[in-house]
Length: 118
Image (cartoon, rainbow, N blue to C red; front, side, top):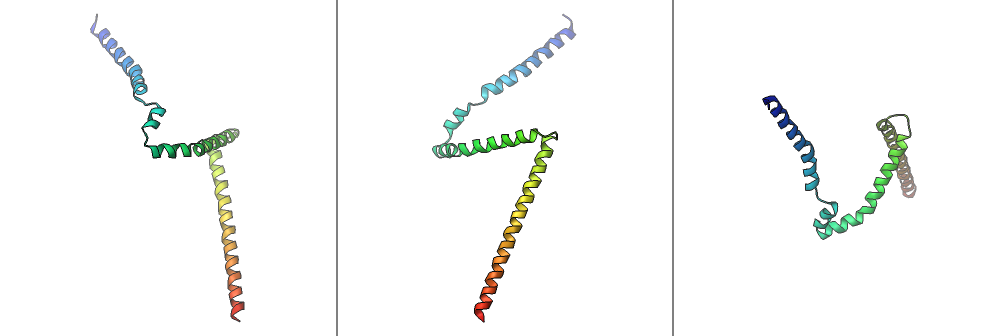
C-alpha cells in the first residue's frame, strides 16, 4: 500500500472519529433535564415549579409575536424593531400624560393652599 493511501485512510479515520464521535460524546455527557431538576435543592425546585407557568406563558407570547412578525413581507428583525419603536412611543406618551396629570394635581393643590391662606 503506497504511503499516500495510508495517509488518506488515517485522515478519513480521524474525520469519522471527530464527526461521529464528537456529537456522540456530547449526547452521552449531556444530562437529562429531569436529572438536573432532581439535583436542585428543594427551594430552587419549588421556585422553578412556581415560575414554570409564567415562563411558558411568556414563551407562548413570544412565539405568537414571531408568528405575527413573520406574516409581514419585511424581515422579522425590521418588523420587531418597528414594533419596539411603537411600544416606546406609547410608553413615552403614557409617561407624558402621567407627568401632566401630576403637574395638574400639583397646581390644584397649590391653588387650594393659596385660597386657604387668604
